[in-house]
Length: 565
Image (tube, rainbow, N blue to C red; front, side, top):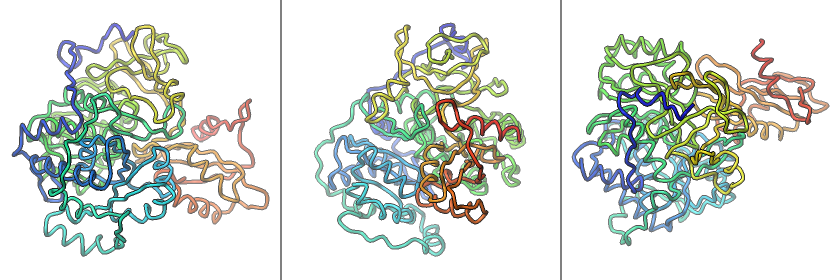
């Protein structure tokens, strides 16, 4: 099936192989900064950073990191929203050969500790407002240094004053020490730090760690190379762009998300464009930024486009500057797409909302809907240099046209593997008889006669809430620690704006009564152990769980029960 390559002409050109330079992620950005030194690299709350200044900040911060003992191969947690320090940190670490590992800024202390221990994180970079979570676990997690930065230092003068008088007043003072360091001080002194020429990471060495659920729905640390990240950014430029110097991206997808950084930031910077950094989604904020800066590109999740499509102000602003708007992170319903496309046309735009498909194991996007052809519920065709096929479960035998099977992916964005887990890696990365390495995604889908692919369902246990992956087994582990809980099972249930949210079924221990007060107590007990997205939105007490023949909870039966309701 895939050998026929029926999709190759859908991008309006003959098949081609993109060139992926033997450079690091920073090397690609450095090349762009040298080529376009006067163009803007970042916009943030009214403050504009020229590309040459951005490069200088990256170099200074790499010196600062080296001075405090971070070296090639060291892994550093990054717990930051979309702010300039996040961008600088990624590339500064990459310049040193150190390895950034971004996590969700709202991660609970127990989650942060789990991530840190899983990858043996040497240090962490976070925001002053998030520091209390790190204070709880720094010692137990073995994190030697926590570098703390502030939003205020990146804002324009008047915006910064306003921030200090409002939200800034709520932030507790950080107790700086030899283990808790001030980002601004480190950066200001770095210009005078002597540093030998850094030992860069090779294009095919591990350069980044992202967290995902793996093939089983259990959280995994995914190892990615410079070439993986660079390849995705170049592919998206070819399939979704092209991005020209001085063009702007509304960078709203978070930096901890593979798609958010690769497309929302890296693809823009390496092509001479400008990132408009948005640390928190608000419809009014996005409308104001679009009116002010007239960006050419934007990427988001279905929830974002659902909200924007219904927002009164967004429906009234001009949208004719856009060249590309992309949706990832979860399946895009036809209703949301139709409504948002109508808003685009009303705003004078000629583009349509284009859905993509991918996994963190392939640095996210590996397929996208073509510019001028949409078929309902399709996620499109492979990006240049990528291959997709659908196989019968547990085999490499290809399915017939429109026959459901497991989606497999091959191409230059495939991960190096799962960190310290060769067995799990071997389960999903398999060399087929065609000689290619294929990623078995665990997702069920099909392909039509023209090479368009369709997602049907996830075979693994993952809930997608506003585009964020939530793992039922992780939630169940927390719930089962509550003294009242004998056994729990978590499933995803439909939500009108967030696609899915977690719901917990619970069998209580003897002596406990299933009251509303107990439900709230159980949910409250999750607060310090689970990120907001992972906390159950509702709880249903049951007398017993449906079980499989091998004695496991039959969660599929509970999902079917919810659908029948």
